[in-house]
Amino acid sequence: MKMKLSYAPSIRRLPSYLHIIRTFQRTGEPYISGTWIANELNLEPIQVRKDLAITGIVGKPKKGYPVEQLISAIEHYLAWDVEQKAIIVGAGNLGSALTGYQEFRNHGLHIVAAFDSDPAKVGKSVHQIQIYKMDQLKEIVEAMNVTLAILTVPSPYAQSSCDALVAAGIRAIWNFTNVKLKVPDDVLVQREDLSSGYAILSVMMRTRSEHLS
Image (tube, rainbow, N blue to C red; front, side):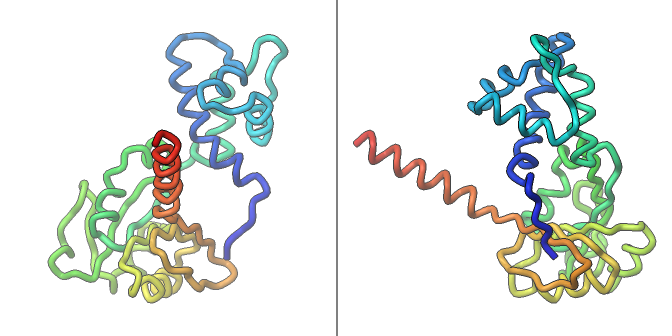
């Protein structure tokens, strides 16, 4: 199941706001203006105010937003103020890199186990995360009370791995493969298409090159 969020574009911008606000927090100033945030990110101030409004916080006229409360409001809206356990399925290059990504832990996402079908990887660890056999999936998921999985397997194994995750009790899958997964209605899937970001950058580079030539 893929839920449609009417605020999806705003939600995608909130982490950037949070980074900017945390940097500003070091100045010791108690308030931050929406205009300042907008200027840092090359956005319109009205867009920033609309985005922040979904968190429920309201700025004060001529002062802006209280920094501490704004950080808390964004973190709470994103559910980054609670711990979320996750597993990684596919301990290859991408999966291994994601296990070591510190920002996940900063946002409350704790990767507690990794799984792979390669016997050479099973029993080892990556970034201090133990790698288990795929047939241990259900056992580990239940023992660690995990509901979220990050899927980074090669495309031919994506659907079968997904089926195993659903059977193990996983209810949300962050899909880093290029396969559109088929899941029951009560399972959430968020696909992360890494090639899309590169496609945009590539076109921008070509356009700039053509403009300069």
